[in-house]
Length: 590
Image (cartoon, rainbow, N blue to C red; front, side):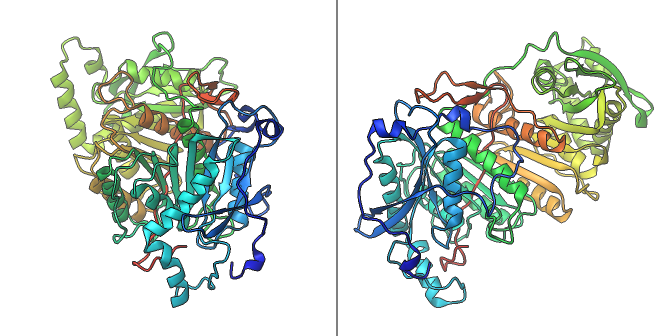
């Protein structure tokens, strides 16, 4: 925006919509939320725009102009008003891209969306050339002055909260690039207007970024690309430290091989898959924060009647006898084989927990669930095995990594040959000790027979094996508790994956410890459990090329009367992460 001529103008006024009028414009969120597939194309250069321009002012009286999109006329207004999302633009100002995102939030998700203006109506923005001192000075007035930046953001939040159609207690914020930086700065100074939560997409993280000066209240989701030079692994370490120091509830997500500005379909770095996956993560995150989706807090099934013991062997170890547990969906036959998910147990071996997960996989999602055996038939069936014996077994396999991987491969081979299994669609997921095994498998195993490998709270204290050539086709998902895995170990793992050109996704959850997915366990974390498992489920949808949806239900605890919005039972949605942007202290934002 180099001149005012491109800005739509209308008289400055305070928005005040009557409830009767708004009822004609309101939408039923239940008919708008579409969770049919996490990897459908979410938008593009030809996406529609349905917004109206609205003027407002900041604390200093500067004239600003944002663009409002409201849900279509498909139902009554919620009792307290609609949840709302403030969108912070990238360094090109409010243009078609932010207006399209606002329209998507309103039309697809049923939220009031407002594309905020940070630069101002009368700003004369130089040509975007990072070598130009004038451009750097223009951007620096925001990047190098957080107080000024934040007061412009606050003006947008206050404007949105003043609208009659908006539930002022349910306002969230998302930002892209420069706007992602704004999101981080907003929470760093202790602002609480957007209390529902904030999401930052591919901002820049610089060691010179000022840290928080107050505790952070809104939950924070930061989503970044593994190949983004502005969000290095070391920068993520700094971010985690800053968020922890401010007692924030946070989640970060990293996508392999993704460069800066990957959500912007007008950018040469646009990545359709990462955009779709991160959009779903944001959508799920907002659903949780607005109270429209429920966390997965209870075991989904009793499992005792849904899992059968089966014998198999590790043929590469002289036929070492193993016993796994199989859960098969209804109406599966040899003429209609289905994908399978192999579950690697924690150090206690196959227990009720893993069997419940297998039953969940089969009964709720329609895939075969199989709990693998690592220790062997004799250990499982012995009545004289103590907890210390199991600890010793676990330690032996953590030290003999090749033997551990051999046991995993035995499970893969057994399932691949099973008559009811679609042998082209197999995935592996592991928990705790099993999660560590999953990571070993990605580094030194033959993953050519599987589509995806996931690790849930898999510890890395025993070190990593020397990586062989990783299969670049397998999708790797790492769900890590920030209070369990040291960030230095995660950085080491990511650097190995990067060197091997692996396709990975790493999600980190604040305050989560070992066992954060285990129902009724001492370390159970409903947020980390729900987000991580839902993310894995959507990954299974992708790699198995199916379009099943998690079973949704209306939340009994929803604060929005009149909003018949779906929530997740058993499976829940996954947060995405976004990151703050500073460049070499020059305040240059992409």
